[in-house]
Length: 528
Image 1 (spheres, rainbow, N blue to C red):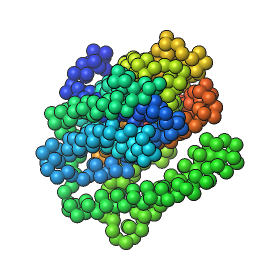
Image 2 (image 1 turned 45 degrees about the vertical axis):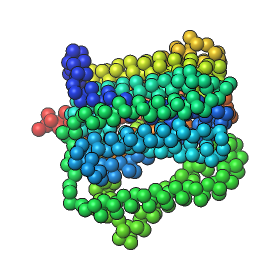
Image 3 (image 1 turned 120 degrees about the vertical axis):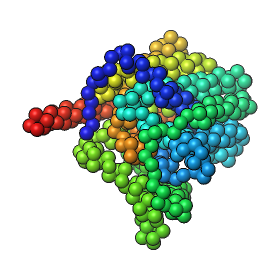
């Protein structure tokens, strides 16, 4: 059962954990995982905005990161399928980490080779490059997350998560602030867009991924990895992969073929609801749900035709879910999933438009880079250490509540910045508070996710949790540009902050449930 008791560690023993080899390893793997993130969600938005692409289109590009939200779909393949030669040489986890890192490098190079303003096709290719980067980066996350859970026992997961996140955010200084400084130094500004500057910047970012590659080659395979049965043949594995690819093809083709129909639906729905942005959201959601339903039906019919390796599907999709509900029961499981799905909604939705907001109120790329991508990330790293250490000392649930309250309050500060406008001191204050709060909350949240993951189904369960964590926030975040256009920045920031209030109630329910469970356990022990 899930527990939330304060740690018995002294401050000295808590800090000594930072020197363990597993902990230091996560610092560099976190760096490798963090490089692609800013290149999709922040640097890319400034690149496109600088190139004259509309705000609505710029924020739509955040959907390229939806691969992070659907990585649970191919996590079983990563968890199960061996790679020829590499798996025997490096081990199951390291082999997949290396392949994912190579895919990330290729995707970044592809994006850097495209000038989005040359034609509509160029913008389409840029979108495909961003999707490829999202997919390869999400794949890397799947394996690193599994490696992290398997690298050490549960009591160390808080520190592992803290160190991982430190490396992750350190990389975001490089790919976030670093890319903005580089692009401006090489000659591209909002007033004078220069493609060559952004091309060179993205190519340099691709080379930074070599740190992750070297780390992967030097580390050892985790000892806690659950061994995979060798009872399946290569033909059965290929059929398993084939099922996944066919269902993905059906999902994508359905989304494409129905796009024109749903485009005509959005306007009347928006007029009926009295809100164009909400109409667009309803139309896109309907298109997405129809595509998913079609893919599921495809898998069902393939199963009826006997083309599906049923046992593999059961082991990799059904059993991990069944295990979760069996361990926690239906009521607590649903509460946990709701909490995981909505905990980060406030800061993710706001974060999609943040860089564009800074630029729109008069800050240059170098100022944004210094404040948001350098100083802000340092503050987040500090917040992460505070969150990780406090989670060990005072319990994860308490720090989750503390972090959630901080996020709601600090997001309101953006309303003040929107009213004041260009003010460097206020910018640093708002970004400091926001990132410190986000760091505290995220460290506790990552430790929480690791604590509810069963090591027997590491990759799949952790992928489900981390996918759910970003799915709804990113879907809504894709419309942040349209929402700002309709209601303005101040009202948007108020809406984003209020989104975090229901989350506090979910944490309260979790704490209440845990207290009840602990009392029941104590009563049972007394009776025994």
